[in-house]
Length: 318
Image 1 (tube, helix red, strand yellow):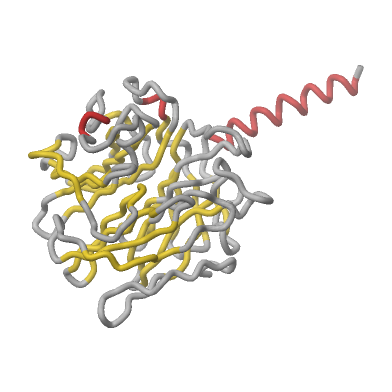
Image 2 (cartoon, rainbow, N blue to C red):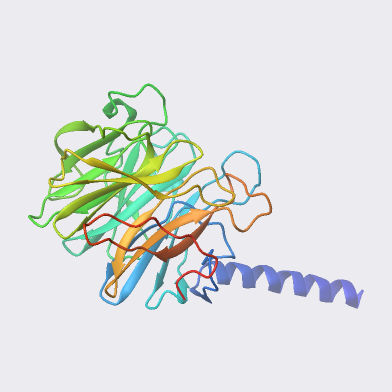
């Protein structure tokens, strides 16, 4: 009887500890790639504020070789790319009452006017925007409806066309959003960051086999649009003098990642070095579309402004 009682106490203590851990900060060290090994973290996005890199990811629940199970998004931070902090779950797909899919697809956060705006996508219901006073959240639906829907993807005929938002605030203060599966779309955002300003436009890049996952960044006055190409996906990129183009295709930037059919990237400068953040399937034998994990490797520009092909490593950037 004592053994049974002790087992019950142990069980209750373990459960309460797990709940407490879920709601508290969790510190860990990256030991090469993937950098996060206690959870599956697809579709990374990042921004830098001061001496801190903030990493935003999706969350594969790890049901190998099954349909995607993605219920929430995650936030991490670091000041050295080795020591990381994970924060309590800041945002769930169920926080968006208008979503009918239950899948937390790719997202990107950005700061403006002292607030943090997190643009998320779902499997068919559209792109939404959440807002918080802090980069780690918690976040709440900012407008109670989609910012963009499949109807805005006028050149597409499949239901999951309205996914993968990427944001940039240009030097003149104008905010832009890029997105799309199968076709790439873009639009201006109003100053309030929760309304589209002007028409939605389609972006065509001669020579590119655009699939999804656009990421827009700027370097030395040029605009760089990277994106997943083909399937299984590689990452390719194009360069323009103006944010609306025309963009000149520059070829493959990152090859098919190990054990994953998809490719999703973020490109950021952190402490005067450039980094390529992506996911692979390196945590599972033979991989799986539904068990993806974030990795980080260095990114280098050539003298002519092109980007050298990314070398994916197991050692990472430590």
